[in-house]
Amino acid sequence: MDKAPRARAPVTLLAARAGLVVLKRAVLLAVLLALVFGTVELLPGDAADATSERGESAADTAARRRLLGLDRPVVERFWDWMSGLPTGDLGVSARGEQVTDLVSSAFPNTLLLGGLALLLTAVVSLALGCWAALRPGGRADGLISGTATAVLALPEFVVAVALVLVLSLWTGWLPAVTLTGADGTPADWTMLILPVLALTIPQAGWNVRIVRAALADEARAPHVEAAVLDGLPPHRILTHHVLPGALPTIAAGLATSTGTLLGGAVVVETIFNYPGVGSVLASAVTDRDSPVIAGVTALSGAVLTGVLLLADLVRDLTAGARR
Image 1 (cartoon, rainbow, N blue to C red):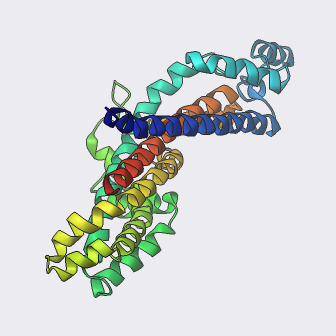
Image 2 (cartoon, rainbow, N blue to C red):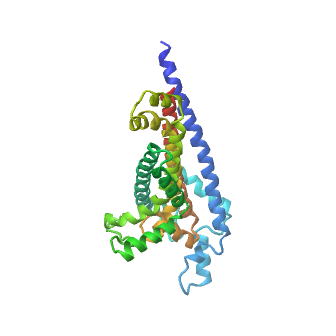
Image 3 (tube, one colour):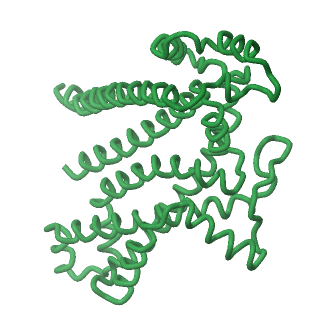
C-alpha cells in the first residue's frame, strides 16, 4: 500500500521543480522584455520618425506618434503590452500590423531552420564525439578535438560568408539566397542547406567537445571499469555503459545551443535572405518598433524555456534510472 505514494513522490517533486524553473525563467523573461523596451527608447528617433514617408509634415508625424501611443511614458506602454501577453496579444506594429500575425508567419520558418540545425548538430557531435572516445589519445581523437576547438571560435556570419563563396559563387552548387514560395516558405529545399550548415558548424564544434568530455568523465566510473575488466567489446562498453551516463551532460549542452542557434539565426537569415524572424527583427530595429522586437523575444524565450525544461527532464529521468 505504501508503494503508490512512494512512486508518486518523485513525480510530484519533479513537477514542483519544473514549476519553479518555469516561474524563475518567466521572471527573467519579463526583465529582459523590460530591457528591450528601455533599450529601444534610448535609440535615436522613434517609430513615428522611422516609419514616416518622404515629404511628410511634422504635424503628420506627431499625429502618428499620438496614434502609436509614443507620447506616453515607456513604463505605461510596457505595462499595456505585458497585460496582453497572457492572452497572446502582442500589440500592433508601427506600420499598423498585428504583431501576432507578423511574427507567427515568420517564426515557423525560423523553427524549421533552427530545428534542422539542432538535429544535425546532435548527430554530428554524437558521431564524432563517440568516434574520438573509441580511440582516446589517438590520431583521430586529436584531429577531432583540434578541429572542434578551431570551429567553435568561428562566428556564424564568417561561416555563412565562407559557405557562400565556396559552395555558391565559386562552384555554383547551391543557391546563395533564399527565394520564397507562395506559402511564405523557401521555394526549394536546397535553399535550406547553406543556412543550416552556417548554424550547425560552430555549434557542432562546441558540442563535440562537450560529448567528448562527458564520455571521458563517464569512462572513469566503476561500472565502466568493471565492464572493461569483463572483456566486453569497446563499442558495447561505449553504447551500453558510457553513453547512457553521459546523456544528461550532452542534453544540457544541446539545450544551451538552442539559444545560440536562435540568436545566430537572426544573422544567418539576413545573409541568406531567409524568410524568418531575422528579417522581421531587422526591420523592427530599423523602425524602432518595440512591440515587434519584444514579441520576437517573448516567443524565442518560450521556445528556449521549453527546450531547457526538456533537457532537465532528461537529466532527472536518467539520474533516477541510475539510482
